[in-house]
Image 1 (cartoon, rainbow, N blue to C red):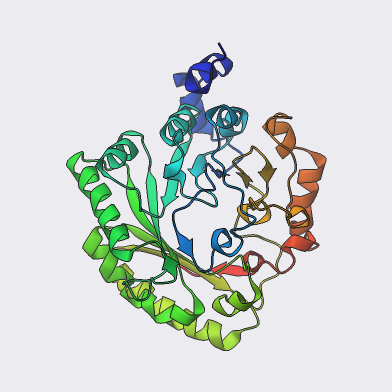
Image 2 (image 1 turned 60 degrees about the horizontal axis):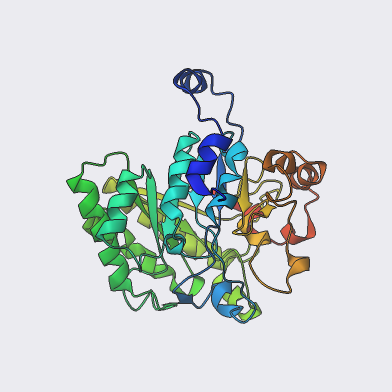
Length: 351
């Protein structure tokens, strides 16, 4: 009988020993990758108005990564500091989610995830705490029911309840290793809602918030919800709101991180940090980031895939001439056409 999962991987891969781990901590020379983002599931119960999962639902490919595919990432995980389990869907829907986290931890990686919160319960909260996750983020696009309404199917009250469940378990087990974050999407039509975020964070015990803007535009009319480097008036207002909110969060001792496009940015770097990070889709295909590997049928020209872990060693794919060339083009100011208009090239961290 074919063996799969962690039992098989224990024979296939050797875990780092204590002296190897100490040497890594002292020398810091063996982890050239900052993060591997893994799209463990493309399924999602939400119907967010801005998400390609909703806009392209007829062409969307629904799939969960299996544990064997994930185990093939071991050589990459041994060279990465972090594994982030989340892509274009709800990661907790994958039945092998916690086994994947265990394997990533065995590889010596920090493990984090982002969830919509809809299927959070006490049992999952316990497994998240006991599984050694250092960051669990909950996605939001508003700070009350009305402002979060664009996230159809994702009830605001249910998200708050999910945060409370995890927070209760975390505190009861004194899990000081874990931080709870908000992954907050600020839409242009809903800028002012972010002002209430520090108070919501304090109420729920959320440690930090990371504010992003609409980076992938699945439909032309949604461009008005995004922020482009040339939209100076829109950016000026957003920057004023975020600076004021950041000051309030800092006064309350909360983490608050944000970035906006800058008109004078050279466009030779990427907020996705593609020089030291990568994305692996549920089918095992490897790409520079999540935005160039959507699980959508008929989108071949809109993808940049440099190999699949089922066909080739993932380290060979990462080190391949084609993948290197993609990364070098961005740094040289001659990015791939798919990256040409991406706002991630122009974002400047301002907190």
